[in-house]
Image (cartoon, rainbow over all chains, first blue to last red; front, side, top):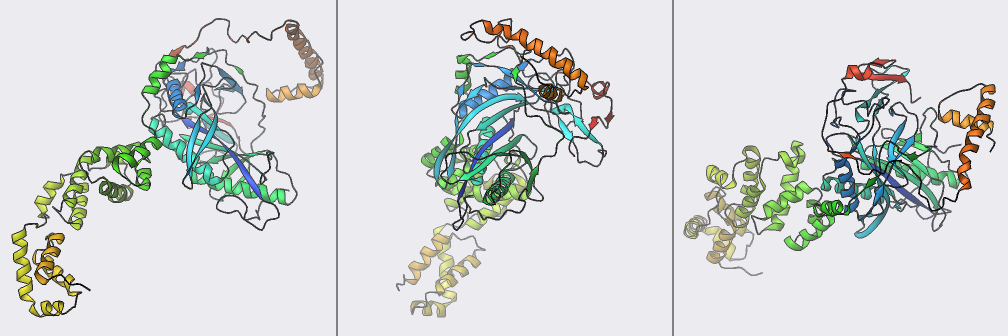
Length: 503
Length: 95
């Protein structure tokens, strides 16, 4: 009997709460497939672009027609090495491709060219931050392989007794990143995945888009009594297409396994498909899937012997990685950790900040504008930063105008909105709209005098101790100047004229 | 080394082939002979000899990342027993 309604409650950590007869802990390992951003496929010259009409990016090689021979794409190898170096892995001096044999309609050759005994990258680590503490998740390996085609089952044009196959994706280059089973909670798995996605985007080797399938994650999970050294029986989870659904699927599966064990049952080793809508994972119902891949070295491809000079060349071209950038932002720009983390989320956002930061000393204020107004605008308009109409230099100039008192904070917001509309320079907008603050001392003195003369009664009551009237005078000065008076100077002048009150 | 009927069944399943009982016995016998023949290599001390995967000692044959024209959809589907809307149509995979 399979337990379908999980009983025990898990805490936010993914571990069972107190009060259980027995506590369990989870052991999670992730296999992440990353589609590489090459122009052409890994073993042939067909295009890798997404969304073409079915079976239009195909040739004898990727269709597995008899006699066709694969030739390795150099760029795919370079991308894989880039990833290997970024995670501190060892680049295998000799890597060999292998055939993984199985029958499935989206695999025309009857085997997938992958790597088995001699993968391109061995070891390495991905750092995640769990509750403010840095934790390194070790990697087993990273290897190169080809993607399979796309099977269409569910669309309305698919008949009741058929599956439709599009071979465009056959042969698109992938790296598979295999972690050691050292993730302890669904939350850690989500953080690891987010870090991995950020890394491939920084490296420019993949779009990392999970919804489009450019990044796919399978999870292996087992549970065992807390503190036990022996691993439990694991299951494999597939079909999660967002980081959130990986987390949810793992939460579900851990609960299910714990419930089985608590009822004295045994977990069966099997592959489960996650159903995002229903929030359940169920055994995959495919027609026979033999798990004997009979790997053997691919006779159609020669071994890959990576020249150390090439590795050094690639190492030299690596961009600054997210965590290093974050630490530098904290030091160089005096930003709080929180700001630095958010600003370095993507390379594009980090670059935007740095380009702007060259034009203003007010880096924390700049950060506030970017994390506030800029991100809000991108969200509202559903546009990417590349299409954001305000150049970084203009944003920095706006920050300067506000911080130097040229315009008020509220005028700053108006200028910002106008910049988003027109892409104009902030100074130009300030001039056109007459938003400049009045900071001229003699001009403001005159206004202050006029206001105080107009309200002698209020002045008298203020002097007798009615402090709250101060804001009334400020308000009147603002009214006289249509809100353009520099509030700092107005405050100062009013205090002088009225005499500073104490208590 | 004798090959059992169960082993023949397993290999047949992996290769998506089906046989009559008579054929299975015949294959068991033939497979046993093949394995026996290959096992002859065990007479040699090969502990320090790396396996040969290629007879020519070539490495690093690579191509630049350039898109080249392939087949048209029509050509790709020309030999397909069944097709629909530009796809290959195959027997239903997921039940």
